[in-house]
Length: 124
Image 1 (tube, rainbow, N blue to C red):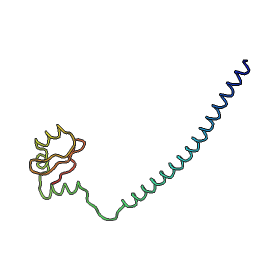
Image 2: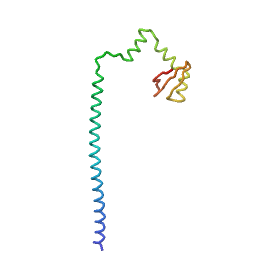
Image 3: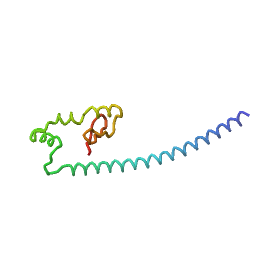
Image 4: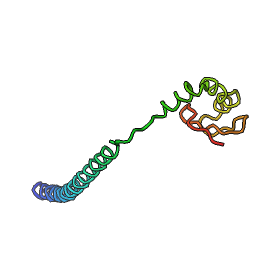
């Protein structure tokens, strides 16, 4: 009887083996497909980076926002610290401490848009 039982065990193991081998074949096919897709995506990324670099190298003279800010401050004589103090009034500070990020209405009527503990924009 032991030979019959061993035969049944072998048959069960062979079935498991065949099933697993089939699954491995499917997985290998999926890996190949994913590798092809990965290579295509990496090539596209490389192409986009090259285009960005190519377009970013401009012969035109540009001006940074920092330079504009310094012009406003130094040439026009506008006090930047005073502007900061005006924007960061008690009402805005209180709204932000309660609500966190968002859009808050300043007592002077404009809106302060905050994100990550920074006022990122002002709108009317």
